[in-house]
Image (tube, rainbow, N blue to C red; front, side):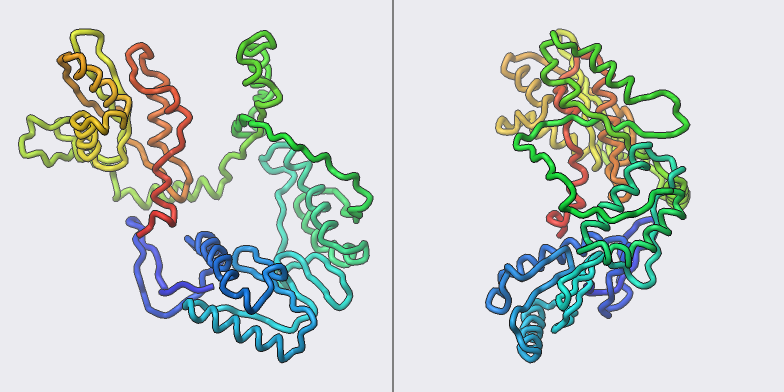
Length: 419
């Protein structure tokens, strides 16, 4: 897998800087390595439709950027010819591919497949050191207990028989021992296990994911389920929506020390990129929607609509300059086909239809970071939901459905939106 140019990223802007036009490998763990790998996998799916005349799709396996093809009753010269045809097809698309043909034994993902004996066994790279989560780590007890059993199950599934399992289990057993686990790996034949019960009906489950820490003595899960039973008893009209069958709890792990230090280092290095608290480009400062602050980004704002009746408030967010968001609001107040853009515009058009005079004032409630593709979190949306929850309900224009809405700021990081 290759990238068109060699580049690196510089702080604090994180803009890619092209250093050369030489093709280079996308290394494992690189900044966009997973995204590039996923993109290549989707590209291979498209390519499979172009090589139908070379290979039978039923004999090709693909996982992201790793592929495996089986050639039945082919001579070595025929196998080499197919490899050359595949290389030529990839070359037409400007891609490079590395292939090994006419093999009786192949390592695919974590399995070694042997066609000569019809057997298969676990595979790991020669210089690979296996590490597992330590049994004394700050993880939920159920996760710690299921780690050895899940490893044993996986090794048994990718072993054709007990002999293959025994010949490869020592490295995994040693890794478990280093992690403090006393579990003994042993082969479990798939034929000895009863078939699992297949559920035909899917169920919509609401998950509660509190952070787990061994330093917290309170059983948060038990407390949560007791509150569920208390506030949604069997005679409640909402019991069919909120009960122990469709509301589940699963602990989430807190940040480890490496992640905490990494976040601290990034915040320290990026101190030069401080937030702008005062910025305005209005020709007439007296007409600025928020005096002296209309160019501020990443804010939670409040609009207060004053009439001859009780004033109404609207909570909104803007990850661009507030003035751009303000222009969008003004456009929705002016053009009728945009009146349903926001709850605020709906209310303004109700006032206009009833010929009610109104006045709108704007205020910044909070400045926070928008969605980050590194932390996978959006503090801006979180603070918006907080202010909606704590606002005065009778005067609030926001819909309650906004509390469960998905963060839209992550869409700008999707490949489909890259230009």
